Length: 159
Image (tube, rainbow, N blue to C red; front, side, top):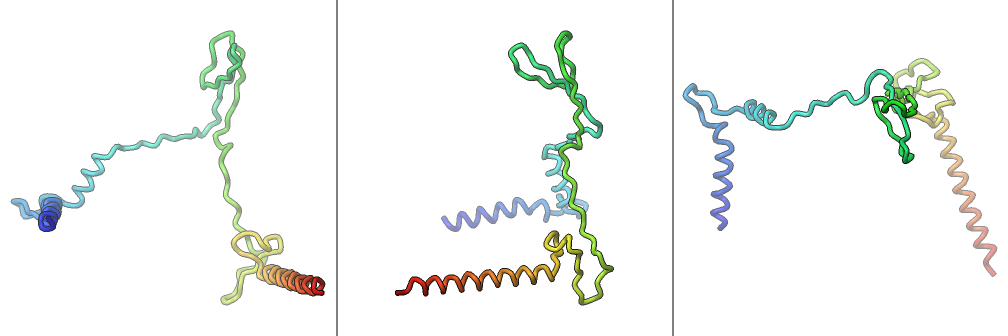
């Protein structure tokens, strides 16, 4: 059984690689990787991605029918139906990028850290080193105070 599986695998590899290895009458391979790629692309469905959002504001008509259900459409309703025209800006739901922080001082010399102004002390990708040192000192002070209180609390409970 093992020999059969090995022979089957070898035959499969040979069948797949054969057209790439065999030469035609002109001495060129019968099939090239570029031809294989083109035939694969041709066999896949093409997806034309339409422009989802228009560039100009769009008018949408809104009205309520007799049962109280709201309807929205790009075309106005039948005559005699009261409707409201809504103008929708396609850029309403876009999110801009955050501005890049700019140093208050000129560019730092080689080997020196670039320090931003105090308004950017702990924000953005460039924290102020002095603010970080101060924060670490405050954390250490809080830790020492908690340890001192824990020790005093243990001593107070002792008989």
